[in-house]
Image (cartoon, rainbow, N blue to C red; front, side, top):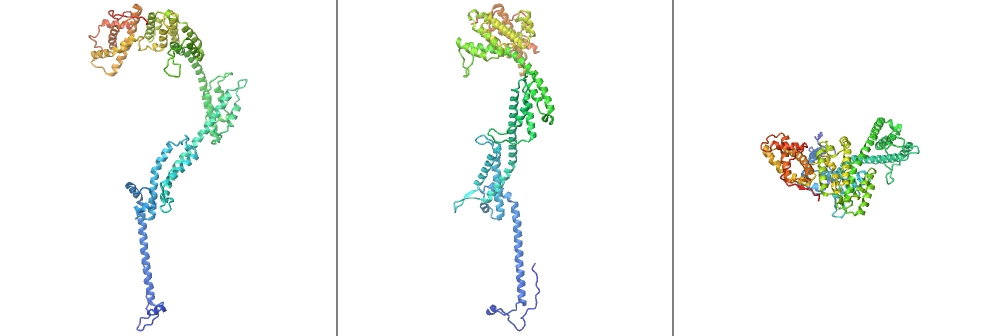
Length: 621
């Protein structure tokens, strides 16, 4: 409020006027008034009041403007969202923002410009950083995060990309300039985002450098360990003192001669200890002094490393494991030797035969059979034997002589085929009933050896049986090797019959017969029960067929026709249904025929083969 001034008596307002004008005023005809007259004082008071009114108005205007600026500032985020929603601008600049919102103060226009640029940067470079973290490798395949120089170069490249977004050409000078406010907002946002990633990158680099150095140290330890254990002195002792000195003096440089990251002493100790323990675990060789090398290595660990943490307990546990492993390795070697002399030997002989037979694939070109002449085959066979394990070579050389001396003309093809079918069916039928020795071997000694033998020992006896039959001309080389190669399958009681005629008959007819019989007995049968029925049926059928075939071959030297197998199949269906507890079998088959099937399955002489069917003669051709 304006200050009030005391108004005094005005001089010169009486009946007589006394002009007090200044020279210029007097010249213009004004009356003279004294400088301190009442009129002068009144004019001064009115002027001061007017100035104060003007100042008060300006203050109110400033206050209102400030309040509006604050309100506008609070709305900047929504204004920015509206601009982007309506796509009112492309490249952000303060000029463009001023055109869109002239009502905003200059300060708020600058803030809005920076906010828009910051939002654009966040949206674009979130994806850029995410993609880079997923695939930080350059064209050479190097991880740029782990190479600080390359990482800095990548970051600088991103800053340049941001700058290019806000560059423009001055229309007057032609110079390239930058929308400063927008660029500053974008760059500030990029730097904020960068800071959040740099911590992770730094940790990743540290982990990578630590791994590189520890890997180097582990290799140094392993190399020195092997060098020490491979070069004992004349008394068989190892110079572990020198080994630890060499490890301690490791250069810690990469393959380019550049120094590696310096590790803390504790990290070095832990790495050396764990590397020695890891190396020891696989060193099970017993040296000339009767010591397991790995245990000798564990005993060499210095006291300083032993006493850290629970290292002593780790050493004791590993030594116990090493002793057990050494014993197991001896057993494993024994098993391996046994395997080489049985299954391995069988497979090796089979390959020698296939080379002789012209079916061995010994070339780099797959599926190309080799047809050796006598001389070429002999060279290939000799080379094959030379590469075989030592335990197999003598046996393979003997087998090679058997093949070389083999005379095809001394073997009757029909007898060979008959013997092959009998032998294969006997093995398949009786291996799973644990009485194969009774039908295959004559002497009590062989029977007892087979009965009490391991799987590999039984395999050896069967291999010898086949080779004896080849040598004695009971089997042709071809028929004998066919049984020989399939011994493992036959010993498992294979579902495949040892004759294509029998097997194809089963496959062609069994499906229809199963469906017909199941429908007659139960109407329908669920899938689980049907699967079980099929499995039981095939087992019964195969067993009865094998027994019948063997009886027929022994009695008549012939294999029966398909009609006879269908008769057996019908009986097998009934037996399978009976086993499953399906009793509704009226009208299917007589109990007499069922008894015959069961007797044959039990190995009795009653044969379910139909006498009306003409048999197939065994010619072997």
